Length: 158
Length: 414
Image 1 (cartoon, chains in turn red, yellow):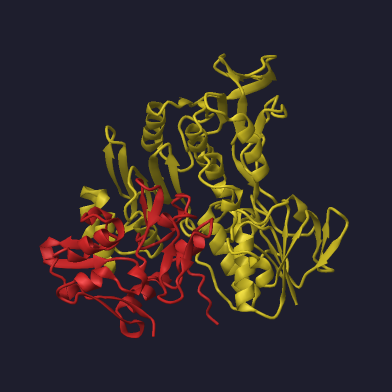
Image 2: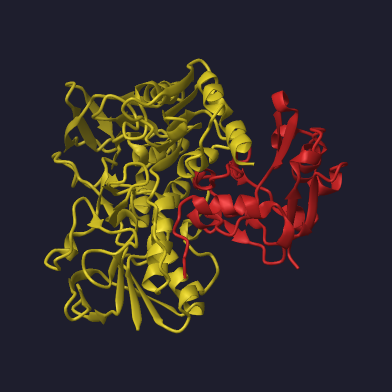
């Protein structure tokens, strides 16, 4: 059974442990600015929303890549950026309608969530279960995917 | 049943892969006009900078991709189509029959009416062959003149600057990237490029290029300002046009490109078109436009292929969008970046730090955007525009600070 990240903003306290864990695991620094998951804070409403790539089926980033540098990890369903092939053209960063592929000027490559090879550090670090890694079938990601389908169209109806 | 695709760029290759998945049993033939494996023109600047070798531009990296997927890749140039007999005639005299045809022949650089463009050290930067020619001339310190500071010109500029040439860019219009940027943003890009040592001449035309007799700078480039610049190499990037000449006589409706409907069908039965040669529905205007950019090419290719394979997939239209890196300053434009009549706009301009954000609204929805100096979450602009997110309260927040695009998107969509 393939798993995916399930995000429940109601449980998020805005502690940013996920951002620290992500940046430390991927970039070896405790720096939220380098995290692939970002917690948006809506202070007026006291609401926090962790936000990252949903590994959507449409995968605009993967299709838009002109050099085949983003591929599907069949084990996890993650869309993976291969640094050795990425030329840093940034087309994927505008093709992704969620804005979850970002360009890193220091490396000249793009960066996105890769689900940490099936053991996402953000979920491990979350103390309140706002981020969990669970069977893909019943996650709230369906909501985001449905949203995604409104972008672009070109969905086969048959 | 034989699907034939003319063109082996991103639209053609995406269509071939999609057809193969949608309809595993039929023949797929893809005809390319260049003597290379299918490659991406977008990646050529990175060959110029030395970041990748030519193989790095190939659209599919797995060895034997086309054979493994039973996609027959043949080389040749299509001379004409006979829709009554459902055959193509190639320039070498051979014929190719089709059941359904996709035209994905892309575009070619335009040669402006300037004397001297046929001299040996004058090149476009469009094919791998062009790239090899430019590498021969563009050595460190060499005097190079780039004609055109449009989107493609600017990408080439970045690569030439990185090679360390002494670069002068000549643009006929009054600002850089005039088709993706307004005056404020275009001027910021120009100022940035000048701080990076690139000479930028806007509102200036090249009137003539002539041989100089000099061994190093073999060319003299005449400008309408009366100045003359010596050059070792001239690169011409003054726009592109759709490759549709060969459809003449087929009865197919064309304007700037081949007119296609929401199913990517041309006006001729069983012939579809995709990518830079196709004039398809424009998401922002409801009219028909050629959007010669990578994301549109792959969307077109995928959607055309699904429809060809009998899986109806209507297309809502392409969103005009671009992302550009001008010697380190990153910019992006989306949709109606120049706004609509009577629409509100929000603008944040920070000239000293080369940061700019402008949003264009239709009621409480964003219809266009332009940004400079920002890379984080920039894709949400596509999401905000294309899913027509009603912003409600967030419109006022964005009017006050247009940099809050990602917050607005998350707040309104999650």
